[in-house]
Amino acid sequence: MICADKKMKLLVTSMVFFFCLGSFYAQKQILKPNVIIINADDLGYGDVGAYGAIKVNTPAMDTLAAQGIRLTDFHAASAVCSPSRYALMTGRYPHRKNLYSPIFLRTKLQVDTNRTTIADVMKRAGYATAIIGKWHLGFGDQEPVDWNKPLKPGPLELGFDYYFGVPVLNSHPPFVYVENHDVVGLLPDKDPFVYGEEAYTRYFDEKFDMDQIGGAKKAHDMYKDREVGTTFKNKAVDWIKQHKDSPFFLYLATTNIHHPFTPSPQFIGTSKAGAYGDFIHELDWIISEIMSTLEEEQIEGNTLLIVTSDNGGMLNRGGQIAREAGHHQNGELLGFKFDAWEGGHRVPFIARWPGHIEPGSTSDALASNVDLLATLAAVTTQRLSKDEGPDSINILDILTGKTSTGSRHDLLISPRNPSHITLRSGEWVYKSNQGGGGFVATELGSHEFGGPAAFPFTGQVNSDIEKGRIKDNAPSGQLYNIVSDKGQHSNLYNDQPEVVREMKTKMSAILSEE
Image (cartoon, rainbow, N blue to C red; front, top):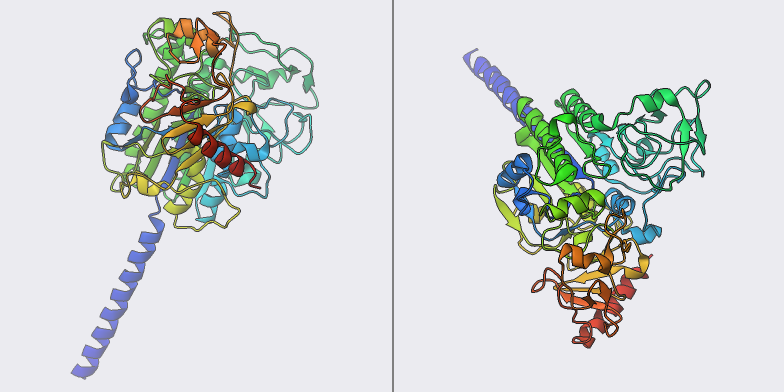
């Protein structure tokens, strides 16, 4: 009888042990890291304190850098918003889509719904997925887009469970919010959108020739420029709280700091860089609120939080005012948004993942936003097929300090002008044309002020440019050693013909890939 009791106790003990062991492994599987990508709009390399800014204060981003890693050679795959977002979303260079310019309200969805996206990757791993903020990749499969009907396909057909945000951008119509497939507040039968009628927004300070769409007054009335940042912050915080008990992926794409610079009143006049800097202050506050929410909900330790930008800082009117105040949007880098020069696409990248990323670390390994798809696959221990994110390279080992160099040697970068497409290969940067390939308006005060004409104003120096013009004897292309000449002061195109030939051959091979 005693032996029988001992056997029974042993059996029960074993069952309890294996039950606990099973529960332990089940918990280990449940504890997948949450992932948040905050993709700021037009945030330049020099717009953050951790990257050298002194005319603006960015305590949240600086704290995040102190708690995680800061990459110093990270690039958007394009110097333009829509192509850059395409690269991040799909892990594909935007030239594969022939996408070089921003898209506007008439343009259909630019991502094939059969294409694997970052949201698809996370969805396959059992994550709840959401995008809050600026979309800017089109809707539907017909042009022009019919804004009076459900906007599909869109983000929900690309792996996201939930979408709330600005459908195009904060400087172009329609100035409304979209939630999932529908314009918020739209009454299509009583008050529809009407192409050709004047679009409006309350604090708009920059007028352009743009495709117009009016009507939909109730929907437009719900959109208030100075409340957009706060609205996105509130939506993101609420969504995090609702999904805190299971793995989630949030892509928060702010309209900060894209023009028009319309921060909430509490931030007006708080920086030393005009409205441009005030908008950075609001962005930093948004990030601080996300960080605080993670801490309050006790999920900070199990969340990979990334902050980056879709392209470099812009020399628009607000940017010019900031520059006059001594703020250098892109630090010492040459050029601005839209340019093939470094300032157009080298951007901040900060990541924190407690227990995995060493606090206060930095890396000068080459990386790009096109790499995030493969990286998220690695975070969730997935293997991608050959046609999934073909240009994406896993940078998880860079973030966790397992490698100092990474696996990327070459990076193709698309500026606004496809004739200036650029190849980075090791220490070399090459493009087969003169100038930056971005904006080239010659008058200070113009929204499109840029290129060589802006050099006397910005004080930037390049061996091809003198008194705001490209020299008559300047080389036909450009080659820079970006390691020894980060500011791209000296064009070595004529001095290194062998390197130029190698770069041309390599670029042609990449561009010919299907």
